[in-house]
Image 1 (tube, helix red, strand yellow):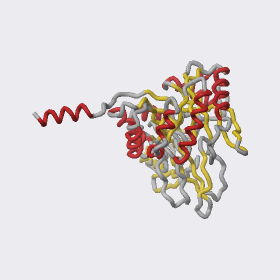
Image 2 (cartoon, one colour; image 1 turned 60 degrees about the horizontal axis):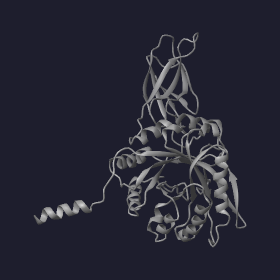
Image 3 (cartoon, one colour; image 1 turned 180 degrees about the vertical axis):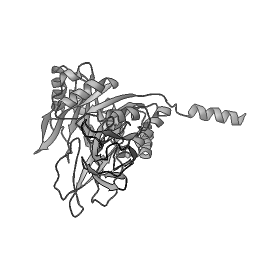
Image 4 (cartoon, one colour; image 1 turned 30 degrees about the vertical axis):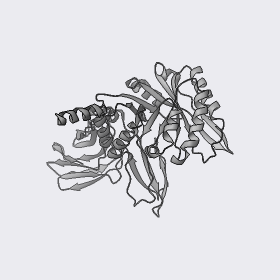
Length: 404
């Protein structure tokens, strides 16, 4: 009887858990609303409960805020609930005044509403040092008092150990825990830390839940191209678009790994603290955002599974009037970007001549032709790329040996 009573007591004291699909928000983080950004919102914005739209960025000059406003496409956002995001650059202090941020926040919401956006929330994105949370709290009190909509913040995992965090959260109407981060390596030889570590992310979510305040979890879809000088020192990183670096620069790529993020989604779907309100994806994929995931990748991960991989090589006769001439292409039928380094084809007879295209070089090895790339470029889901061509004696049958 005593054991039964103890078991029932333990069950009664165990906090309830949640399970099942979660709602999602997505961030639209571009300063310039180009046609690809608008097209992405129109095509995929309806998949999300709300869109977190970068509304303004604040930098500092002589202790005063300098505001860069973002003007979204009102037509693309029509019908969507909008979270207007105010991005605030690092500030060393002091925090004895709110420095005009309350007015900036109020003006941002007013401007968005005047432009026809359905603003349901203002979110402040300020990556404060954990030692600054007390000062940040005084900022938030003034911003919240001046805002016509609920005000929330983004928070970092290292804030969870700070005693000032409960007071900061009490000065808001909600919060989003950002469990992703990018740490630049000092040199080209240093290992690249993952943008999201699934074990660390899940542990941070459990710690955050002990505060007993509902929150969203921000997950990554982005990546960077990193540049290093000839001596190996880190120079900088680019996001969204490629840039023309100097020829003596070494480039490396890092991005959020879909398998890791899918593991977090699957775990939270199966079992999570009830304080988790949903997910927020940073950022919504667009056709011009070459560093972020494609939509097919995000769609798979949102369902808690790793994207499928399926790259096929194709050997097809060239245009009529060129007997024996074949084009060699690769096609990505999977759900994630693919890096193709080698395509091998084989003919009954040796190729007369062959050449590579798009960064591939051709090498004839007996009856085979190998197309190789030393610097492969990502091949998007659904995309096809020509890697070269080969001419064989008329009537030769040519097949694919393999693709890597």
